[in-house]
Image (cartoon, rainbow, N blue to C red):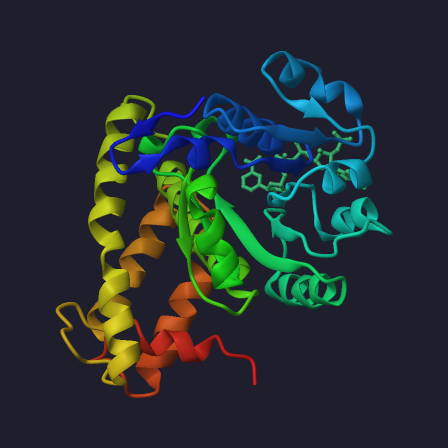
Length: 303
Ligand code: NDP
């Protein structure tokens, strides 16, 4: 059947075949998104039973990973546990002429190595870092997306297909850059979770406080403060770390004692805050109390 939507040839849009290796929680969510969008999908998983429900939804199951890869001219998507499992799954499989998109979480170095590995096997390569959890996949309105880096032409060729499960953001032709962005974003999230943990610990002994009401304040406050990333980026770009500063480092560092005394009064271990406070104090001691936060970045560099 060939139908045409406004500006879109649906035969092209709906019939690009996809091969997916890996049907864990994330792989299964990806598979369902492509099936729901009417994509011809071939799947393979080490534990074949996981493919069963997808067959009922229209997936074709390959008996081996080699068969799955050979079955398509479309992209071969990998969504496996880790970099080692990619080696294990694709050992000896002919990838010549294939478009390989690796959504398996890896380090930037592993992604670069994987790109060289793919090139030696005659494959084009795109690395992806998934910024979503499985329930967000297939629901772009939830804001989930995948970061991509590597072969730009490959990204453009399959962009419409890649945008089916989640938004697609290309961050550079260095194949390590998607993983670097992924880990940087998750590292920032880890710091945020540390702050949330400390904040709830401060409230812990106050049994009459409404935690959900506090959570609403907390989420709103963190959202309001998140925009400070733009100011830090601007300072790093200009090299002037006093640019646009409204709350300078000396003032912020002076407030740290209030935080620490409050933690002690509330019987809370301040260990999640003190490493950052030590960095702030060090920067002020170096004579940079009039700066914002950008100067702290260089203090983390290991020479
Ligand atoms: P799961 O643990 O649910 O699934 C892991 C998958 O890898 C399964 O298909 C498993 O096969 C396969 N696998 C593991 N080891 C091997 C091996 N040695 N040989 C062959 N296959 C192997 O993980 P997810 O599906 O949740 O995650 C997949 C990728 O997506 C990971 O890299 C993860 O970091 C990333 N991701 C996941 C998110 C999430 O919230 N789940 C969020 C963002 C990224 P089998 O079924 O046989 O065990």
